[in-house]
Length: 355
Image (tube, rainbow, N blue to C red; front, side, top):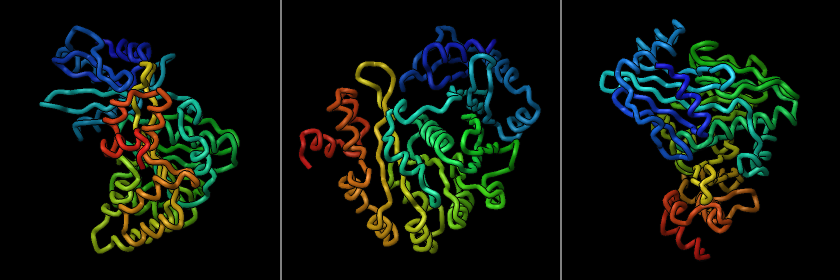
């Protein structure tokens, strides 16, 4: 069993993710939908061969055996890089691999809100988050922003990732990339001493726990601009999730800190295009104005949505507005957009022009 043939099929068919499991058909995610790659089921022996082929590195093999799972980057010469996750299900190995575009693309290429992205790229302190479900372009968006800074500004950028996905070449900026398990033990450990490395910008691959969140907040309070990704669906849920990392008796303090350091969020959802040519992002943008900072500080999180809806002067836009814009531009089918809306009733009213 040569796993390379599946990697080649992924690239040929424009797939984002590959799924392999014993006693199942190989599948790939193409334009957001799972499709069968081969009519021949993989045997358990095939999967063991795939795992052995990919885990030639002793450290990876040891991590897989100890944790019953491992996440790493696998490079195929003349083809590209793949983020591979091998895990155990029902006592047998399974694999999910994501094709990593090694070249960061521009805001226009990705159909992102360029003006707002550039606004956040010009920040020199505080916290910025890109949010959304897995596989909806968070890392790609951050990479495009880092590359924009790299081209237009002289900064020292440190990335802490698990694992490193996009590779950057120094242009105007100096970029040092650290990978968990190879260059550093953990996010909190890396952030403990990062301010001594004189960074202007820190990118944290993902924040999953209180210790990492606390270290990120400390870094911003020392005058660094911190960028990270969050597995949340919108700005309001992101704020609530950050606060809930901490015990209840600290919530007032954390909301106060957030009101001072949070610069904004971009939340993403990738939708299938109406013409069948791939996917296009719907996005919510929140810029933390003095009013929004006050609402965060006072704990009136739900009220923030009204200011996002009416904040186009500051570069803000809600998912509802983004989805309606995609439908009216004939880029996305109305029924598809409705499925991705936070509130289907609100979307229907907005599509009819009722505010």
